[in-house]
Length: 94
Image 1 (cartoon, rainbow, N blue to C red):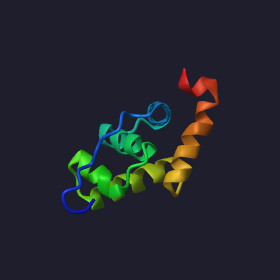
Image 2: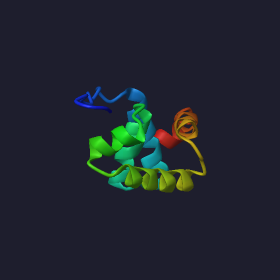
Image 3: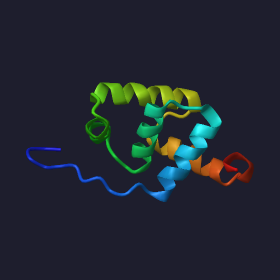
Image 4: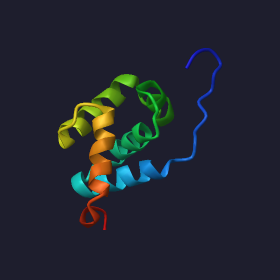
């Protein structure tokens, strides 16, 4: 974000809700990690996530590192793919 540009929050996507539900069920992530995952799934950058959650960008990176480590993934794309693949397994989401 540059200058006077304001972040406009879009309504949370259905995909983001599914991703967070799956990750919570599998790992019991913290409330803050849940918020980070939800915003990643909505496509926000680290900077925008930091702004939205009133955190530093460095703190967001730390949360992502811990989430990635818990799941055994190494990128945002892998995080979303991990959750989507689990969503197709009905026993995980019930």
